[in-house]
Length: 330
Ligand SMILES: [Zn+2]
Image (cartoon, rainbow, N blue to C red; front, side):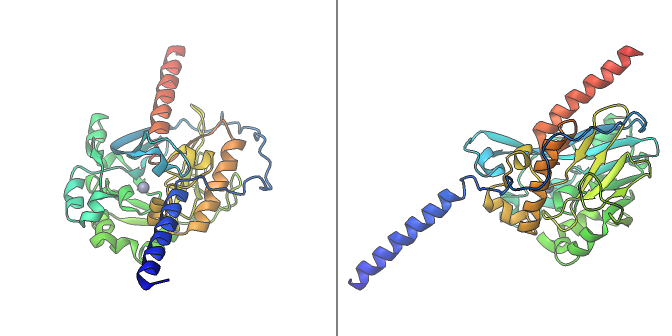
C-alpha cells in the first residue's frame, strides 16, 4: 500500500473508531446490579411519630436546561432536564440551618473572572433568585441561621456563602482535607474566594453504620438529622437523612446523583460530564448502586439530589399539601 493510501486508510479507520466511541458514549452501560447481595423487598418503615417536627424547604437560586442524554447516560431523549442550583432550609427545634447554599446575589461577578471554558460549561446557568432574597422573603436574616452544612466543596454548593457572611460553615473533614489538595484553588481559587472568611467547623461521620451506609453522624443526637458519607463525586460528599413526625422521611444526596434516573436506572451522567466532575469513578459508581438498592428498599423515603429540579418541585408541592392538610385538621 502506498504511503498516501495508508494515511488515508488509517485516518478513515481512526475516524470510524472515533465515531463508534462517540456513539457508544451515549449508549446505556450495564451495572452489575443483578448480583447484588442485598434484598430488594421494601424494608419495614421507621416509626417517625416520636421524632421532632422539622420543616424542609428548597430554595432554588438558578438553573440550566441540559439534554436528558447528558444528565443520564443511555437516555435517548433530547428533551431538556432542568438542573437546579438550590439551598435547603431546615428548621429543627434545636437549630435553623442550610444544607448547601444555592447562589449569592453577586455570583455573576465571581463567575465573570473565570476562564471562557468554565463560563461556557459549568459556570453557565440562568440566575433566578439569590439566597439573600429567599431569606428576606421569609422574613429571615443571615443571623437567624445557626450554620450552613455543605454537602461538598464544589463551587456551585458554596456559591451562596457571600450572602451569609459570618455564618458558621460545617464541613466534612474528609472533604476539606481532599479539597486542600486542589479543589480550593481550582478555577483561580473560586471556592476559596466564595467561602470568604466565614468560620469553619469540621465534622466526622464516625458514628455507627446507618440504613446500610458505612458510618454516620447524628447531628442533634435525636436521630432526626443523620449524615452519611456518599463518596465518589468528591471524597467527602455527604448525604443527610431528615426523619420527622410531620412529614415523610427525606434523604438529601448532595451530588451523589444529578437526577433521580441516575440511581433508578442506575446510570452515570454522560461520560464527558461524569469524568469532568467525578473525583473517583469506581467509588462514585458504588455509591450510585448503593442508592439504587436503597431507593428500591425504601419507597417511603424521598431521595432528592441537589440539582434535581423535578424532585425538588414535587417535594415542595407535597410539603405544601401536607402543611395545608395539617392546618385544616386544627
Ligand atoms: Zn453540584
